[in-house]
Image (cartoon, rainbow, N blue to C red; front, side, top):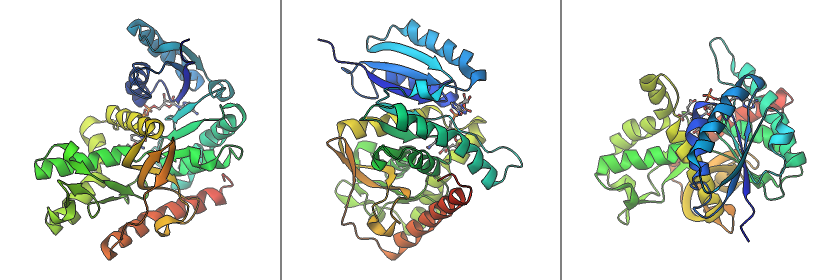
Length: 325
Ligand SMILES: NC(=O)C1=CN([C@@H]2O[C@H](COP(=O)(O)OP(=O)(O)OC[C@H]3O[C@@H](n4cnc5c(N)ncnc54)[C@H](O)[C@@H]3O)[C@@H](O)[C@H]2O)C=CC1
Ligand SMILES: O=C([O-])CC(=O)C(=O)O
């Protein structure tokens, strides 16, 4: 008998990341080439028609693994029975908007979506938040879903991880596949810390293969500010690379990996306050993320991890004060 399709809900489905993401989910890249999927697209009412257009194109691909598509502006329907939720739709910061306004606006999206997940999703629901500010949006959704195990709420730093791999590979003139144990720590923001002191290239520590000035003044800021550089160059934020990273995150979560980066709820490891959704070096075993333990953190790394974690704490305090968590 054919396997029951996995229900994948994508919010912001008519947006630019949605357009790059849906076709790869439907063609088997999210879960595997033998796993049938059912897509559920959640959009705001004004964008439902555009999502319907994307669904027409999905139909026109005749993907063998795509067993159905539903489109709605009702979160309760969209997450009903969902096994995977990709929360992409978010309120972008616009001119004149204060940080508090941005958090409040996103609270109005991620709070109700978290509740709908809580009330309607399947027991094995896994949530990846892509929409910015991703870590704190994930925290808001998680707090609105008290019946879902907290560790099922994650935020995306895989794009930062992939950017770090690519920058280092270009510098050392090696294929990305030669780089192991790359880590992004902290927030998906300019304070994130891409760590070369645990990354290895051909068995050697990456930080020892590059000069200090390049690591500090070129590598770290290039990775951390890559999102802004893409916006500057394209006139729009990263879309296909963000979709690709979302695919990588979920594929590894479900199918396993020995080392990558993901923002997951802290258990207090590495001095990151419990409950913050912060990026760590992680493995995925038996369908669960585990923080890789036992790494030595020197003073240089400590300072940078702490700075990014401080920003996450400030965001948590701000959403607490707004009553969003
Ligand atoms: N974590 C990461 O590494 C990255 C995160 N991003 C973030 O991803 C988000 C989406 O980016 P794009 O697709 O380029 O934006 P976009 O503006 O093209 O699309 C967003 C879509 O979300 C929809 N939407 C808004 N509110 C919604 C709601 N309540 N329910 C359902 N849908 C809703 C909009 O109608 C729109 O179609 C942004 O917040 C962006 O900053 C982008 C790149 C990387
Ligand atoms: O700032 C944005 O919207 C895009 C973003 O997160 C990234 O490219 O890392």
